[in-house]
Image: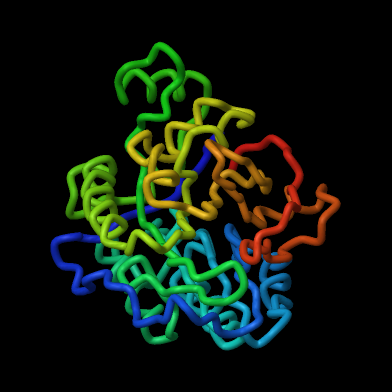
Length: 318
Protein backbone atom coordinates (compact mmCIF):
# COMPACT_ATOMS: atom_id res chain seq x y z
CA UNK A 1 0.00 0.00 0.00
CA UNK A 2 1.17 3.56 -0.62
CA UNK A 3 0.86 6.52 1.72
CA UNK A 4 1.68 10.18 1.38
CA UNK A 5 3.50 13.01 3.06
CA UNK A 6 3.26 16.80 3.22
CA UNK A 7 5.46 19.94 3.01
CA UNK A 8 8.21 21.46 0.92
CA UNK A 9 10.42 24.51 1.56
CA UNK A 10 11.69 27.10 -0.95
CA UNK A 11 15.21 28.20 -1.75
CA UNK A 12 15.73 30.22 1.41
CA UNK A 13 18.72 32.02 -0.11
CA UNK A 14 16.49 33.86 -2.57
CA UNK A 15 13.55 34.86 -0.37
CA UNK A 16 12.90 38.60 -0.71
CA UNK A 17 10.76 39.02 2.41
CA UNK A 18 12.35 40.25 5.63
CA UNK A 19 9.58 38.63 7.65
CA UNK A 20 8.89 41.89 9.47
CA UNK A 21 5.49 42.22 11.07
CA UNK A 22 3.05 44.69 9.51
CA UNK A 23 2.37 47.88 11.43
CA UNK A 24 -0.11 47.33 14.24
CA UNK A 25 -1.24 48.90 17.48
CA UNK A 26 -0.95 46.57 20.46
CA UNK A 27 -3.40 48.75 22.36
CA UNK A 28 -6.26 48.51 19.89
CA UNK A 29 -8.18 45.54 18.55
CA UNK A 30 -10.20 45.87 15.40
CA UNK A 31 -13.10 43.82 14.09
CA UNK A 32 -15.43 41.28 15.62
CA UNK A 33 -14.63 38.28 13.49
CA UNK A 34 -13.12 34.89 14.22
CA UNK A 35 -9.86 33.23 13.29
CA UNK A 36 -10.80 29.85 11.80
CA UNK A 37 -8.83 27.08 10.12
CA UNK A 38 -9.13 24.13 7.77
CA UNK A 39 -6.74 21.83 5.91
CA UNK A 40 -6.53 18.81 3.63
CA UNK A 41 -9.35 19.95 1.36
CA UNK A 42 -8.24 17.59 -1.45
CA UNK A 43 -10.44 19.26 -4.04
CA UNK A 44 -9.73 16.66 -6.72
CA UNK A 45 -12.64 14.78 -5.11
CA UNK A 46 -15.99 16.09 -6.34
CA UNK A 47 -17.54 15.79 -2.85
CA UNK A 48 -14.73 17.84 -1.34
CA UNK A 49 -14.96 20.42 -4.10
CA UNK A 50 -18.65 20.81 -3.30
CA UNK A 51 -17.78 21.37 0.37
CA UNK A 52 -15.26 24.07 -0.54
CA UNK A 53 -17.84 25.76 -2.76
CA UNK A 54 -20.07 25.97 0.31
CA UNK A 55 -17.45 27.39 2.70
CA UNK A 56 -18.40 30.87 3.82
CA UNK A 57 -17.39 33.08 6.76
CA UNK A 58 -19.80 33.82 9.56
CA UNK A 59 -18.85 37.50 9.42
CA UNK A 60 -17.05 39.86 7.07
CA UNK A 61 -14.15 40.03 9.54
CA UNK A 62 -13.31 36.29 9.66
CA UNK A 63 -9.79 35.15 8.75
CA UNK A 64 -9.17 31.67 7.33
CA UNK A 65 -6.00 29.64 7.92
CA UNK A 66 -5.42 26.86 5.36
CA UNK A 67 -2.88 24.32 6.66
CA UNK A 68 -2.02 22.69 3.33
CA UNK A 69 -3.16 19.99 0.93
CA UNK A 70 -5.67 22.00 -1.05
CA UNK A 71 -4.89 19.80 -4.04
CA UNK A 72 -2.23 18.45 -6.40
CA UNK A 73 -2.90 20.34 -9.63
CA UNK A 74 -1.98 24.00 -9.97
CA UNK A 75 -5.34 24.83 -11.58
CA UNK A 76 -7.27 23.25 -8.68
CA UNK A 77 -5.19 25.07 -6.08
CA UNK A 78 -5.71 28.40 -7.82
CA UNK A 79 -9.46 27.74 -8.07
CA UNK A 80 -9.86 27.03 -4.35
CA UNK A 81 -7.65 29.90 -3.16
CA UNK A 82 -9.41 32.34 -5.49
CA UNK A 83 -12.82 31.31 -4.17
CA UNK A 84 -11.84 31.48 -0.50
CA UNK A 85 -9.81 34.69 -0.72
CA UNK A 86 -12.85 36.40 -2.26
CA UNK A 87 -15.00 35.38 0.73
CA UNK A 88 -12.79 35.76 3.82
CA UNK A 89 -11.26 39.01 5.08
CA UNK A 90 -7.83 37.39 4.99
CA UNK A 91 -6.59 33.96 3.94
CA UNK A 92 -3.30 32.50 5.18
CA UNK A 93 -1.93 29.43 3.36
CA UNK A 94 0.91 27.00 3.96
CA UNK A 95 1.86 24.23 1.53
CA UNK A 96 1.15 20.59 2.16
CA UNK A 97 2.90 17.76 0.44
CA UNK A 98 0.16 17.42 -2.18
CA UNK A 99 0.63 20.97 -3.46
CA UNK A 100 4.31 20.19 -3.91
CA UNK A 101 3.93 16.95 -5.81
CA UNK A 102 4.61 17.05 -9.54
CA UNK A 103 1.91 14.78 -11.01
CA UNK A 104 2.70 13.51 -14.51
CA UNK A 105 -0.65 14.76 -15.84
CA UNK A 106 -0.43 18.29 -14.43
CA UNK A 107 0.29 20.75 -17.28
CA UNK A 108 2.61 22.61 -14.86
CA UNK A 109 5.66 20.35 -14.50
CA UNK A 110 7.67 22.53 -12.11
CA UNK A 111 9.48 20.63 -9.35
CA UNK A 112 10.65 21.34 -5.82
CA UNK A 113 11.55 24.93 -5.01
CA UNK A 114 10.39 26.15 -8.42
CA UNK A 115 6.93 24.68 -7.84
CA UNK A 116 6.69 26.22 -4.39
CA UNK A 117 7.80 29.61 -5.74
CA UNK A 118 5.10 29.38 -8.41
CA UNK A 119 2.45 28.73 -5.76
CA UNK A 120 3.70 31.69 -3.72
CA UNK A 121 3.34 33.95 -6.76
CA UNK A 122 -0.24 32.74 -7.30
CA UNK A 123 -1.02 33.53 -3.66
CA UNK A 124 0.44 37.00 -3.99
CA UNK A 125 -1.75 37.66 -7.04
CA UNK A 126 -4.75 36.72 -4.90
CA UNK A 127 -3.69 38.56 -1.72
CA UNK A 128 -3.20 35.28 0.17
CA UNK A 129 -0.53 35.31 2.89
CA UNK A 130 2.24 32.68 2.53
CA UNK A 131 5.26 31.60 4.59
CA UNK A 132 7.32 34.06 2.52
CA UNK A 133 5.36 37.13 3.60
CA UNK A 134 5.44 39.27 6.76
CA UNK A 135 3.46 37.67 9.56
CA UNK A 136 0.05 39.36 9.88
CA UNK A 137 -1.24 40.30 13.32
CA UNK A 138 -4.71 39.18 14.38
CA UNK A 139 -6.19 42.02 16.45
CA UNK A 140 -9.67 40.62 16.90
CA UNK A 141 -10.92 38.85 20.01
CA UNK A 142 -8.15 36.71 21.48
CA UNK A 143 -5.49 39.01 19.99
CA UNK A 144 -3.20 40.59 19.32
CA UNK A 145 -1.25 37.55 18.09
CA UNK A 146 1.21 37.12 15.25
CA UNK A 147 -0.04 34.57 12.71
CA UNK A 148 3.04 32.63 11.58
CA UNK A 149 2.55 30.43 8.50
CA UNK A 150 5.41 27.93 8.53
CA UNK A 151 6.92 25.89 5.75
CA UNK A 152 8.84 23.10 7.42
CA UNK A 153 9.43 19.69 5.95
CA UNK A 154 10.31 16.41 7.61
CA UNK A 155 13.71 14.86 8.15
CA UNK A 156 12.90 11.23 8.96
CA UNK A 157 13.51 11.72 12.70
CA UNK A 158 10.04 10.48 13.73
CA UNK A 159 11.39 6.92 13.69
CA UNK A 160 10.17 3.73 15.28
CA UNK A 161 11.86 2.90 18.62
CA UNK A 162 15.33 1.42 18.27
CA UNK A 163 15.92 2.74 14.74
CA UNK A 164 18.82 5.17 14.52
CA UNK A 165 19.02 6.05 10.85
CA UNK A 166 16.78 7.07 7.97
CA UNK A 167 17.89 4.03 6.00
CA UNK A 168 16.93 1.59 8.75
CA UNK A 169 13.57 3.29 9.28
CA UNK A 170 12.76 3.26 5.56
CA UNK A 171 13.63 -0.44 5.37
CA UNK A 172 11.25 -1.24 8.24
CA UNK A 173 8.49 0.87 6.65
CA UNK A 174 8.98 -0.82 3.29
CA UNK A 175 8.81 -4.25 4.90
CA UNK A 176 5.53 -3.22 6.55
CA UNK A 177 4.13 -2.12 3.18
CA UNK A 178 4.15 1.57 4.10
CA UNK A 179 5.87 3.98 1.73
CA UNK A 180 4.91 7.62 1.40
CA UNK A 181 3.92 8.78 -2.09
CA UNK A 182 6.22 11.77 -1.55
CA UNK A 183 9.15 9.44 -2.21
CA UNK A 184 8.02 9.43 -5.84
CA UNK A 185 6.34 12.79 -6.46
CA UNK A 186 7.79 15.31 -3.98
CA UNK A 187 11.11 16.47 -5.42
CA UNK A 188 13.56 18.56 -3.35
CA UNK A 189 15.29 20.25 -6.34
CA UNK A 190 17.72 21.96 -6.11
CA UNK A 191 18.40 20.47 -2.67
CA UNK A 192 19.97 17.00 -2.75
CA UNK A 193 17.43 15.51 -0.31
CA UNK A 194 14.17 16.39 1.41
CA UNK A 195 15.93 16.46 4.77
CA UNK A 196 18.47 18.99 3.42
CA UNK A 197 15.59 21.18 2.32
CA UNK A 198 14.03 20.70 5.76
CA UNK A 199 17.20 21.85 7.49
CA UNK A 200 17.33 25.00 5.37
CA UNK A 201 13.69 25.77 6.12
CA UNK A 202 14.15 25.17 9.84
CA UNK A 203 17.09 27.59 10.02
CA UNK A 204 15.36 30.36 8.07
CA UNK A 205 12.04 29.99 9.92
CA UNK A 206 13.59 29.84 13.38
CA UNK A 207 15.35 33.16 12.73
CA UNK A 208 12.10 34.79 11.63
CA UNK A 209 10.18 33.54 14.67
CA UNK A 210 12.93 34.76 16.98
CA UNK A 211 12.42 38.26 15.56
CA UNK A 212 8.73 38.43 16.54
CA UNK A 213 8.35 40.96 19.38
CA UNK A 214 8.42 39.25 22.77
CA UNK A 215 5.13 40.83 23.83
CA UNK A 216 3.28 39.06 21.00
CA UNK A 217 2.06 35.49 21.32
CA UNK A 218 1.81 33.51 18.09
CA UNK A 219 -0.41 31.10 16.22
CA UNK A 220 1.91 28.64 14.46
CA UNK A 221 0.43 27.16 11.26
CA UNK A 222 2.18 24.24 9.57
CA UNK A 223 0.97 21.35 7.46
CA UNK A 224 2.86 18.80 9.55
CA UNK A 225 2.50 18.59 13.34
CA UNK A 226 5.29 20.42 15.18
CA UNK A 227 5.51 17.74 17.86
CA UNK A 228 5.38 13.98 17.63
CA UNK A 229 2.43 13.37 19.96
CA UNK A 230 -0.27 13.68 17.26
CA UNK A 231 1.24 10.74 15.34
CA UNK A 232 0.78 8.25 18.21
CA UNK A 233 -2.66 6.96 17.05
CA UNK A 234 -1.60 6.27 13.44
CA UNK A 235 -2.84 2.90 12.23
CA UNK A 236 0.56 2.45 10.59
CA UNK A 237 3.12 3.91 13.01
CA UNK A 238 5.85 3.63 10.37
CA UNK A 239 4.17 6.50 8.51
CA UNK A 240 5.28 8.93 11.23
CA UNK A 241 8.61 9.07 9.35
CA UNK A 242 6.97 11.47 6.88
CA UNK A 243 5.14 13.57 9.46
CA UNK A 244 7.59 16.13 10.82
CA UNK A 245 10.87 16.76 12.56
CA UNK A 246 12.08 16.50 16.14
CA UNK A 247 13.80 19.87 15.63
CA UNK A 248 10.53 21.80 16.07
CA UNK A 249 9.43 20.05 19.28
CA UNK A 250 10.15 23.03 21.54
CA UNK A 251 8.95 25.75 19.18
CA UNK A 252 5.41 26.07 20.58
CA UNK A 253 6.78 26.99 24.00
CA UNK A 254 9.81 28.94 22.77
CA UNK A 255 7.76 31.10 20.45
CA UNK A 256 4.82 31.69 22.79
CA UNK A 257 2.21 29.80 20.79
CA UNK A 258 -1.36 30.52 21.80
CA UNK A 259 -2.23 27.68 19.41
CA UNK A 260 -0.63 25.36 16.87
CA UNK A 261 -2.65 24.55 13.74
CA UNK A 262 -1.76 21.59 11.53
CA UNK A 263 -3.19 18.96 9.19
CA UNK A 264 -1.68 16.01 7.30
CA UNK A 265 -2.76 13.15 9.55
CA UNK A 266 -6.50 13.31 8.77
CA UNK A 267 -7.20 12.89 12.50
CA UNK A 268 -9.14 16.07 13.39
CA UNK A 269 -8.85 16.70 17.12
CA UNK A 270 -7.49 18.99 19.80
CA UNK A 271 -4.45 17.97 21.84
CA UNK A 272 -2.88 19.92 24.70
CA UNK A 273 0.88 19.38 24.60
CA UNK A 274 3.02 21.05 27.26
CA UNK A 275 0.15 23.44 27.94
CA UNK A 276 -0.25 24.51 24.29
CA UNK A 277 -3.36 23.63 22.21
CA UNK A 278 -2.49 21.73 19.03
CA UNK A 279 -5.48 21.65 16.69
CA UNK A 280 -5.67 19.40 13.64
CA UNK A 281 -8.15 20.89 11.19
CA UNK A 282 -8.21 18.32 8.35
CA UNK A 283 -11.23 17.67 6.15
CA UNK A 284 -9.63 14.58 4.60
CA UNK A 285 -10.95 12.20 1.97
CA UNK A 286 -14.68 11.49 1.50
CA UNK A 287 -14.28 7.93 2.80
CA UNK A 288 -12.96 9.45 6.06
CA UNK A 289 -15.32 12.35 6.71
CA UNK A 290 -18.45 10.39 5.80
CA UNK A 291 -18.01 8.40 9.03
CA UNK A 292 -17.77 11.43 11.31
CA UNK A 293 -20.66 12.96 13.19
CA UNK A 294 -19.51 16.56 12.66
CA UNK A 295 -20.47 18.48 9.53
CA UNK A 296 -17.66 17.97 7.00
CA UNK A 297 -15.47 20.94 6.16
CA UNK A 298 -16.71 23.27 8.89
CA UNK A 299 -13.70 25.46 9.74
CA UNK A 300 -12.37 25.04 13.28
CA UNK A 301 -12.39 28.14 15.46
CA UNK A 302 -8.90 28.99 16.72
CA UNK A 303 -9.52 32.47 18.20
CA UNK A 304 -11.26 33.46 20.32
CA UNK A 305 -10.26 30.22 22.02
CA UNK A 306 -12.93 27.63 22.75
CA UNK A 307 -12.98 24.48 24.83
CA UNK A 308 -14.41 22.42 21.98
CA UNK A 309 -12.51 19.15 21.47
CA UNK A 310 -12.77 17.39 18.13
CA UNK A 311 -13.14 13.62 17.80
CA UNK A 312 -10.08 11.63 18.80
CA UNK A 313 -9.92 8.98 16.11
CA UNK A 314 -7.13 7.02 14.49
CA UNK A 315 -6.04 6.96 10.93
CA UNK A 316 -3.39 7.35 8.29
CA UNK A 317 -3.49 9.54 5.18
CA UNK A 318 -3.62 7.56 1.97
